[in-house]
Length: 501
Ligand code: ATP
Image 1 (cartoon, rainbow, N blue to C red):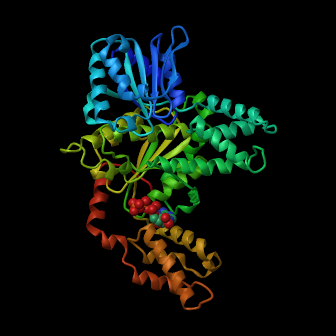
Image 2: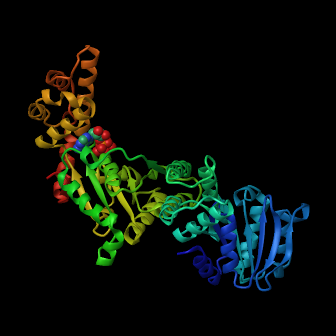
Image 3: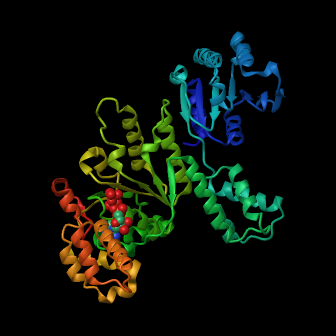
């Protein structure tokens, strides 16, 4: 729901206090003024002081003022002393995380919430770039999400920037490309990025897209929960897993032509869960998917979503999902899913359970082109709700590579390092000798063989070097014998699709 709609709904229902986590103070203030419905709008911030605006007559009752009289504590005292001051008012407190460090202010806000609950048709809106809700106010506060800018809004900002700065002509196609690249950013950030992009030659050209991409990567890194991953691996770097690769290719046709597909009646694919043995290419598949779909890859670290304040974890999850949606189309890779959602249902896992709930609801309802690739080693630890139909389009099981897959994996990793020596290598023999090896084991064998050939001053890599490395390597199936067998049985019981043909 858009911020304006949720504010209006909650105000009507008499909710006394909101918390909005955003950097976009000006835009949020604007939305709140529009939602005010002829109420007065008071605004307080650390640097800007205090003002009261009458939205009915479109004029200031108190113009922006600073000084001791306009300290937040004083203002709250006046409001609490006279109920009329608090009637039909939206009181916006910016820099809320700073204000809420003060015990007296917390106490005054609690009193204000109780008074508003008595039917004053008002609310207090706390705005801050971080979510830090003090326990004293927990039960009065509702957390709201800020809106991300839509494509047309971004395009408007870029056009304004071009006009204001008298930048040379920019084609409509480039304008569209730049606007898509700026998705997920605030107006302030967009203007900064554009200024930086123009700093070298005073123009906005195609090469500036790279800079915007790099800057955006920075910003996503700063968000702390999402990571933008560079796309190096492609689908041909995966040896075997033919069923999964075929499936992904089919989906890529839809994602790349989503408008036509939707017109034809095809739903936007939701995503895929890839589960199975470690080191057999699950992460590789996540990366290759984004490459195949030609869209950015974002990795979500659910562990990093956990915060220590009430509501912080859920707010982080919403923020991460909102950012992914704003950046969409994209692939959202949720790594080690079972670690994130393990132990749900047990005691003391309330936050995890709530996070899991919001993730499930989002998966179920999402219509945005965010394609989720979730990877997990141990599916037995995942809650059954996640595996139910309707969450993921498909669940694949990745097992140890079969003989023909091992042959291909050897070929891929030898080609990456010593393509010229491939003709001297007996791939069939290597594949036969490596029953029970994972893809990562095979890569390790090739790396070791190349390294020892170099260390012994050889001019090329030989079959013997690789056989030698194999003889030194303990395969995964030896190291993890029991758990691999257990997992294989579990996957067979669950009748999951095998990623291999
Ligand atoms: P984990 O669960 O431990 O994260 P994973 O299944 O995600 O393991 P990857 O990280 O994809 O495994 O694999 C590790 C490395 O092994 C890859 O970077 C790749 O180089 C190699 N590898 C694994 N499987 C394959 C494969 N099928 N084809 C080519 N290389 C592979």
